Image 1 (cartoon, rainbow, N blue to C red):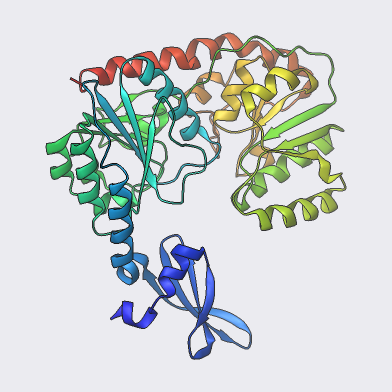
Image 2: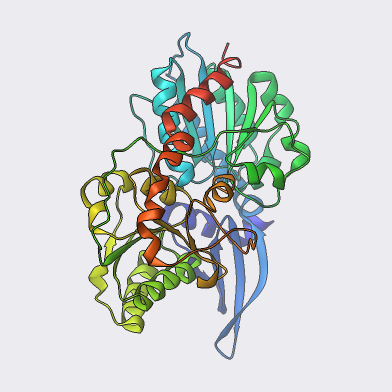
Length: 418
């Protein structure tokens, strides 16, 4: 019935990437597509209001299933060898981020250690991975009713030994028949976020990995989870204190990150520091408008938005130009590895921000270098202690060298690859 009502509008979204269009015969109604849902909304005195939300799966399942069948056919000629195979599943891979950086390092080392590595991501949601000598990429429509069957076919066809879900969100898990998948391969997961999870299904998995101690404590019903933290490559000490007058902010730039970016700008202006802002985002229209508005509001040249960078490569050439770097998570690890002082920002406001110091390092290592209203964490934002903040590189080397983390991870999963 829903397919008849919507006609070919759903296929327009999938094929032409249209996100907002008119409802045939009803000029005051519009249909909007956002995050696997169709929204029907109308107008009252030119103001929009939502009438109905419908899952893409209900509206357009036939088309989604057909796409999965086509995507599967691309793998039909691939022949597996005797090496153990591991399949990573992530619904959305961005150009930058902690999950993506971690996967790239793990894939490289797994390939060198004799594993065949595969990645499945949601079709049209992958921005940074592609086929290479180290891994092969497949795309599926996670929202299709044949997603679980398609996944099982890939596992059997490619002789996959281990399937590991990378959970930034776990909504798609409800579409999977885990019993059938577990008959085909060992199934585990890495949990990257704090939020609602289908814990009953996750307990069915053969193993669970957390990226921080704090995250494991957040899920007390999963006490057997292993911890393999995020890390980065070992780097020389590029930074030295030379009374620099400029700071660096690195982040994915989107609507959610705006409050944190404003904190950084205000901190720099309060301390008479110049600054650069590195990063990009998916919404180019929003980014263009945001850069103009923010630069006008705070009175700086929009050229201070320096765009997307490869953090490790950028630090190699430019770390010495900055007094400190600011951000959260993976950015903090990478900048501290080359000896830079690092400022951890918070969604709670500038009063919640702090440099990573000898006093609070043990707190941050448990929380993957994020902060949000934890009063027990000692805070310091005084610039007079900058040389002292830079003394933590040895701790980062000990805890976050990705070579050691990956070696321990491979030792852990090798028993499942037999």
